Structures are given as C-alpha cells and as structure tokens.
View 1: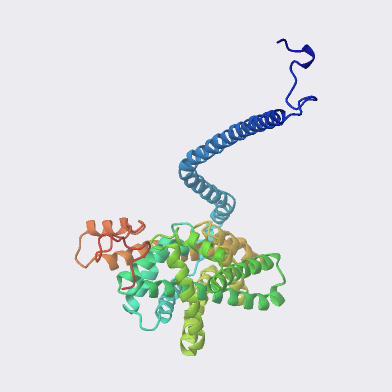
View 2 (view 1 turned 120 degrees about the vertical axis):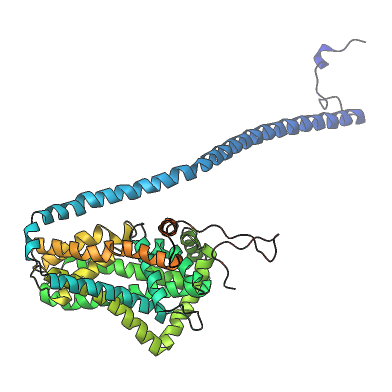
Length: 438
C-alpha cells in the first residue's frame, strides 16, 4: 500500500493520529527528545567543567612552580633592600658627618683627656647597670648564675646586636641560649628578656618626654619632637596591643607573634606567644611588688642616664658644656629614631640625628660631630670586641688555646641546631623551639 505524500514525514501526534497507539507514539517521541536534550546539556557541562579543571590545574601548577622558587627570590631581595638602605644612610648621613669632622681635626689637639676617661667610665657603668637590671627582673625562684655571668651575657648579646639588623631582637637568640646554658629555665629566661626589653623601652620614652617638656621652654619647639613622640607612642602602643590581643585570645596578634618568633634563632612562634602571656603576668606581678619595681626602674633609668652622661662628657672634652636636659632630649630622640630595625643598633641614624639636634641647641657643628663620633666609638663599636671577649670567657675554660677561642667566636652568630628527638621516646620528636624547661 502506498503512503499518501501529504502524510509523509508527519510527526506523531499530528491531526488524524488520535488513537491509543498514536498517544503512545507521541509519548515515546517526546521522551526521546528530552533524553537527547539532556545528553547534549550534560555533554556541554562536562566539556565546560573539563576546561575549567584544566585551567585550575594549570594555574595551581604554575603557582606551585612559582612558590618553589619564592624562597630563592625573597631572601636575596630582602638582603638587597637592607644593603641598599645601609648604602643610602652611609652616603647621605654618615659620609657628610665624617667629611665635616675631618675639616675640624685640629680640635683633637685641644681635647681634654680627663673628660674622655670620664665618658669611658660612665659608659662602662651604664652597661653594668643593665646587668643589674637583668638580675632584678629574674622571675622569683629562677636560677641566678651571678652578676658577673649575667653581665657578660648582656655584653655578648650587645656585641651581636651591633653587627646585625634588628638590634636587640636579632640578638635575642644568642641571649636565650646563653641564659639557658647557665641553668635558667627556658621560660624564665624568655620572660626575663621580654620584661627587661619592654621595661627599658618604656623608661627611655618616659625620660625623653620629660626632657622634651623641660627643654621646649628653654630651647624652643622643634618639629622633630612630634615625629619622635609619635614613633615612641606607636612602638609602645603596638607592644601593648599585642599583649592585650594575646591575653584576649585574638588570632591576629597570635599570627603576628608567630611570624616574629619563627624568625628569631632559638625561638618559635608558640614559645614567643607563651612568653608574651607570661610577660604580661610578670609585669603585673612586678607592679604589685613595689621594692622590685623601684629597683628595676632605678637600674633601667641609670642605664640610659649614664649613657647620656657619657655623651655629655665627650662633648665637654672639646670645651662645650651642654645643658643636660637639652642634651638628653637630643640623646633620647636619636635613640628612639634608632629603634627602627633598619641598621644594627641605629648605626648611621643615631650618628647623624644626634649632632643635628645638638647644633640646634647652640653647639657648633664641629664640636657636635666630633663629640658624637667619640661617644659612638665607646657606645657602639667598643662593645663588639668586648662582647666577643665576654662570649669567649663564658664558653671557653681557662687555659684553652687560641684555637678554642677562635672556634667559640665562630659559633657566636650561628643559628642553634634543631632540637634532637625526644630521648625519652625516640619515636616522638621533640617540640620545635628552645629546649623545654624541665
């Protein structure tokens, strides 16, 4: 039977196909259409997902390759920035001062040696007071190896702080190792160092603000006063904010302390966070113990005041007697500016800021420059060999040869080796950071 051309190619469900078989054919046709559409949509989604996955994998692989090279880029870049900053400071701050001083070397023939000796003795007394401060802030019940050994440890740490950036922060690892080697528990040593550093910084800022209040009526207002006051306030507020954040369990403060602690040789982020908690408790206890508080504040104040008196003597050696309040204002401003961890112990910053401020107080530029250079000779440069000698005296027994001394000095600035596995349980590694207190 032939098919009617008019009905050829009709889809199921067209007019005339109203039987039950026609309804069944219409349902099957619609099901096939839906299945085909679903397969096409699924294919498009799979293709798009595959392309996205390939893109993500490619980006992830590229990031991993870049991340593997990141340590080799960041460390040289960071060193390059530090070296560049040092060169700028030397070029624009130190060299002009040295050139200006070289033109006035004739003043050296008129120098008073008695004032130079007095300045040297005052500088030694200043360092000794810092050792007394160390002994005063030792936690109750902590081992006390004696003032002589504490003083030599502080001197060795000062020597290292004068040759590496970040100053006291950079030498914290050496001080920690030496204190714990003397029998002081790790936590006691860390709390003592943090308490001493924070307390000394607070005392310097308080003395500076007092000297500025007195010197403004005498010598007038200088714009740098505001800058230095802001720097000191920011440093103290940052430390207070970290301590408050840690005591309140703030995650941001914890991350900051971990980032700092992991960069200090011999310490770790966890240990530094615990130290901040213990330091807050120690400062609170120190505030309640009036006798210890008075003794600590006395030694901290004398440490700064005697150092400033040494500067006064070196300026007086060239025949100029500065008002002590004005001189301490210049001294305090220079030291607060030198706190920024750009150069070791403010090298270049203190050497250039102090003469400029002394000139603003009426001292001739030649006397101010030579006086500050002489003071920095015993304040900055002399503690480096003295610290090395103190470190050798702590590490090398008497009668040892020159070879043992050289070997000790070579280990002075090395990072401590990672702690060995726990001897009590060889399968369990010891926790990272300094040795445990037990």
